[in-house]
Image (cartoon, rainbow, N blue to C red; front, side, top):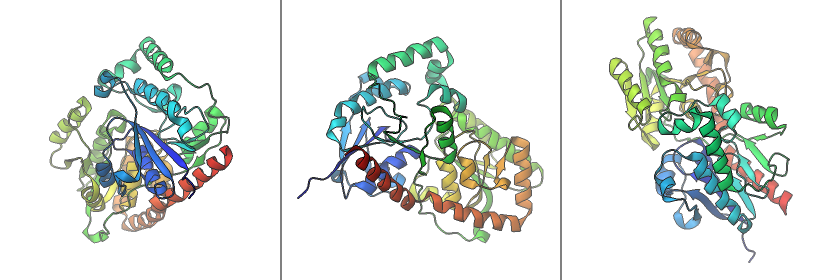
Length: 391
């Protein structure tokens, strides 16, 4: 019997987000036909990840290669670049053990040609400054001071021991998570990327429009770049125009200064703003599906998996005018430029039931692009291409 092709799927830390969904569904897709390993630092709780992403991976179906990290890094919230340096160094060390390597989170210097799935632009400091806000607290210190940032990144490069390969010379296969992010990479590096949308959960209950609440939901990581306070300002102005609507915020607010600020805002607006905390699986799907509308405020996201979740749940979702989220909704009535434009467009939609029906039908078609089945087809094709190129 022929030995199975060995595939290594790398992700620095398996928490909860769009890139982790890509890692889990890549494992789900490839585990039956290949000898698959997950390469990651930190703890990997497969059962919990299955519940969050809707996968069904048994721990005995894959191997887990744990990246050794210094004790201080295992306990730190900050230090992503240092953690990434140890992660990439370990990936290069074991790269020869695999026939195909996939980075589920951004560019990874494996030392050999590989598949790289773009999630955001944190891996390029120039693009990071352009599209990402500085983190707050201790993490922000390494971004706020240029000299400290330069020393920190220099130390990370020394620890990483780069291979010197040019990942953008077309030996590798780069998969962008949106046409928008593919355009940014083409502009910066002159490299064309295939676009593979991340897989989005699909088990949303079907709720008749007449039974839905005339309220809004927003979902995602509770952090400054998500600009949740802006969502509250927008909807507060919408309410002043006579619309009796409300907002449910889904996400963990405890443990950060920004989270506490959102808790304070919700207390002030307690009659119409509800903090749901974290929601998983069916609980999350039900909350989304029960509402007519969704709203997002993060500018310049490479994709915006929370936007795709709201769309697939049947929410008419409003988004800012820069980033991959624009192509998720793909409709001028749902894309806003600033607070007043958002208020005007939401006001218009709320006053026109026929427009709501038109937008719901449009978004139902859009949601089909972000299915697990579409991702499965594309990741299989990518593996076939890189294997043919390198063997």
